Length: 123
Image 1 (cartoon, rainbow, N blue to C red):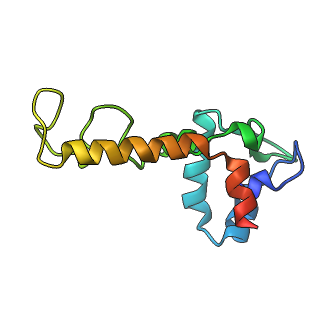
Image 2: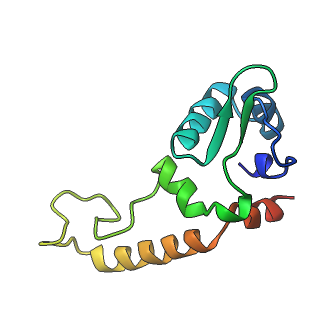
């Protein structure tokens, strides 16, 4: 997404172009882009001049939105950070409180960090 954030507004990039520039497998990146498009973080366009572009300005996309779309971190809320069975609202695992606090801090940081901020650090 940082690569797309560096493009002129309205420029659509092919998955293969982004994959080549970022040294990622195109099939892998295509699946990620599809997921991000379903969450309306990327705008897809078919046909000549098509590809993907950011669906909104980079400063309006938080890393929390991106991570949430990818479902790679425990969700915000009272779910067990370590995904232990039986750990929930009624009964907690031994590390639940510390892990929940760490999870809250992480999500706060992700909400404060925009794609624009990340793109500037990536230069």
